[in-house]
Image (cartoon, rainbow over all chains, first blue to last red; front, top):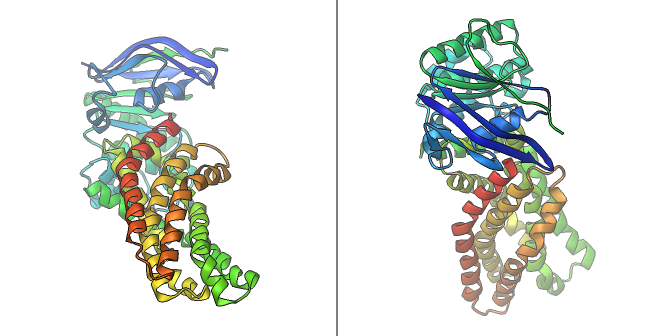
Length: 209
Length: 221
């Protein structure tokens, strides 16, 4: 089953053509690994896939439907994890996640969130303002969404391993494998090598002038 | 519904935690108005004549100071992206944010207004008219202001630009609001003025949520 596909996608940012005529499809249980040097347009591609910006040409389809036409369904099934964590620095981890769950119609209760935070080694830090956590801890709080949103079948992750320690990377790799085995699809960029047991298709973006 | 409630709860929690930031425009408002009796002299007639205009101009300027808060942090920390892909109606979420902003940063201003009316020797009739225009008119500032904030949130130092964009838009509001208070001062009916401000409010209420949502999408793309 094709979860996400791009058809002749081109994107112009400012004066620069970032990429053109990109075609791919990601099946359930597959991971698409986008590589390329800094500035090649990896983040822009991911943002286009999420529907934040529309490509100059081409379209993105979710389950064979244009993502603009099936936006509510697409968004219910999507977890986007961007460069910006999407956490308010003045609210605690728990407050941030409770709000996010309500907003994204995730049924998780506070006890579920506590359990996920405990799995992520954040026990005892859930009531502290996010600004007082370290960079890696903040990323972990943001990553908790992957654990919480169980109805998702597509993850779009932009540099998910940034700032994580070894144990955090292992945790995330295990979670990604479990998600893929359960029939989820992942699109990710990373400058780090993925874990060896992961099978993936690679899409390389060139830096273009 | 639960998303709206959660958003309101979050906004109020944040407002409480950033109360010093909320207090600044309020103090600015009080200080600007208290400068007038010092500058133009304490003669009741003069103060009464300029009073409504002074309060309204100060209200517009001080609400401009706090407007940026509405989406700035959310834009920079990425919360806005998560808001956009939440499968909820972005217009409704924007309207909720505007409501939270109005309640937390403009209502305190209205609560303070009797004190300022006293500073400027407004009569009781004038004060009631002023209160009515503030109650009907300030939501328009929040609603229309949110559109401009949505458009400028991605720019660094959008603050001054925001003021330049918005001040001309508020001129009609200012004219009707101050003339309502002046009519009240002369014991004339001012329901007509209020009706026009109410019409502005209804128009803004109907259209602004969509414009805000669109502006936010443009800023994030």
